Image (tube, rainbow, N blue to C red; front, side):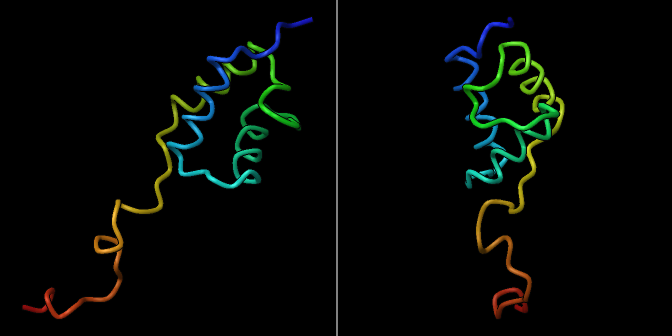
Length: 84
């Protein structure tokens, strides 16, 4: 039987999920399950080998950021200051 995920791998996976802006448990679980290719009840259900594979996948894909950092930068309509 494959060794279970280690604590440092759990920490890295959580940081990788945070970097992708995945905050809800459903989004986080979906990302892990997609990368693992199977249903996963929790990070602790992964093996060390699966965790390394997922971390490798996450490392190859740039984090998906929906915003550029601020509400001001992400505004869609011009403001009076833009029209000056």
